[in-house]
Image (cartoon, rainbow, N blue to C red; front, side, top):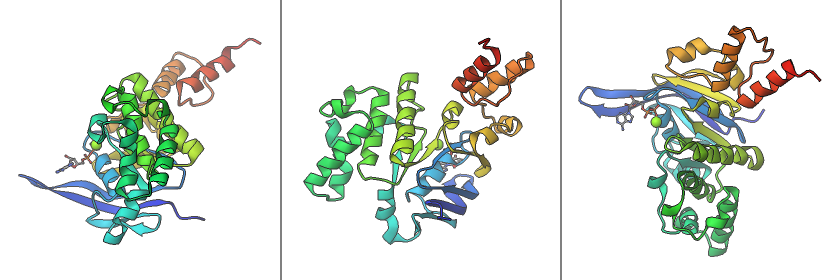
Length: 283
Ligand code: ADP
Ligand code: MG
């Protein structure tokens, strides 16, 4: 069997910290991501999600344990840029990630920095803009874009380096519902159609249910991991970690309590509606 593309093995990390000494941010964390896999990471504030994300493209390195990307160890300086080309990052604030005054120039920034030939840069910019649905807006100044469009631009910037894996740290946290949906759909399509592996950090459980696998973090540890259907069955563990259940799981529990004999465990509202139609259709 092929080895996972990204492996985080028993990683511990402390920030040098402030007045009260070092802060233990990751405490023996393990995580794997296969090629083309969609992994969601959820957890309360301060549980170590962003620190874990920073480990994946060598913004941080483990104190103990190791992180490997496509077989390359993040501890080796020679692997820094090869790994950053393979793992693209998208952060929470859309405005902080824009570097150019025109959409297409912003997407070209990464490939230009890598010294690629102009023909190749053009090809990659076209491809990345098409992949996020921004081709028609390529000559726009980014500050005129909506929040969702700006995050799609940030995703295009990452895609222009043709990453194997995209890591998105709460990319929808500052967006309105429309923007959130645009970003989630873009990310899901990139994973399902283009085969890009995705690590999506989110506090929206209705986003996490779209993943192949969910990892739940608390206090610098991964306390639960598995397919969404399995993870969201542990309502008690999630509640103790001060996490929500996905809206459809909540609603299904309430309906069951009210006597509706739901058969399956729906994770999305679409699944729940399907199940209700199946139960109550008379044809
Ligand atoms: P999350 O993304 O889940 O909110 P973080 O990875 O940002 O969690 O933080 C994990 C822990 O590390 C928290 O206790 C946080 O206060 C601490 N921390 C994060 N960044 C720093 C930093 N730059 N310096 C010191 N402590 C930090
Ligand atoms: Mg964070």
